[in-house]
Length: 154
Image 1 (cartoon, rainbow, N blue to C red):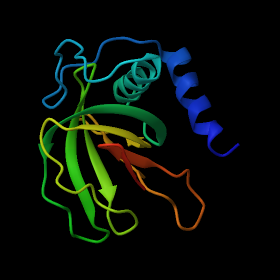
Image 2: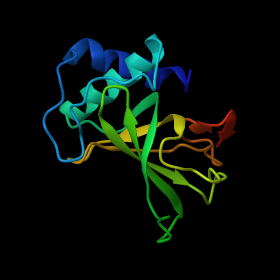
Image 3: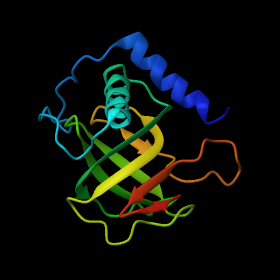
């Protein structure tokens, strides 16, 4: 039941708020959808993220996939995070902050690579952040993951 509740929440968000286009934002591109992501699950994930962004919502469990457009330096302050920016099929960009103290890093990640994710979306004016892309060793949060080149990192 713990893993189903966030999915129900994301579907509820879609039902309540509709599927309007994103507002213009410096890191949220309005480019047409690209073929980096296919299938209804990917489209639903993109839409859930768009709705959360439009409505300034956080703590929304999301699943999706995108293309790496920028690999950022690791954040080594406090818990260490591997950071990179993904462009979704919708054209929206999001920051992925993957805790590498709790999960293995994606080795040799490069611009242009495809990455799938399951984690928690947090709103910010630059497009949002997805974190909790790892297991929770204390079992209090839904486990997330990243998938790259056929391997799962959690």
